[in-house]
Length: 197
Image (cartoon, rainbow, N blue to C red; front, side):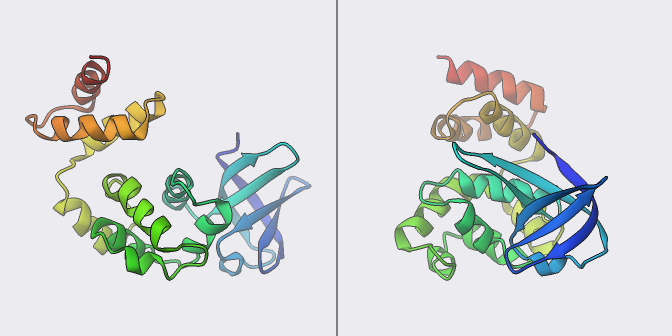
């Protein structure tokens, strides 16, 4: 799997760009292709989707945007096209604020997102969205307001990457938040203990 591609942007279209990496042109779908300009050298973070009949590359300006895309894909009813539409704005603070504050009506403004899907986005991502640092002040204020400190957030992410279901991790997250502040390793161990009871 690719982490990022770095090379010269050779083609910009309304739905994708082509980036030339040492003579190979990669077609990359992006939320806003016009962030890039032909002949610019760019580093594009990549999400690779493999289906039976196709392999598609999705591109992002940084790893935070890629992570936000991946989290949106985990929401029932959100596919890559809808996730890209949601990320089309360069400033994601409105999206993060809406999710953090249970503002499902804000999310229905995006194409392909109805009331049910908007509610599902809030339900699935409210705790996770606070972990993202999108580089703007609003998201930092939200993270400060959250009870989740970085070691706990990292531990919860590690549990999910180990294959535990999001629903199960969210259940034990409430118990972990009640513990005295500790290290990521300790949160992870205690989380594993709770999950394997």
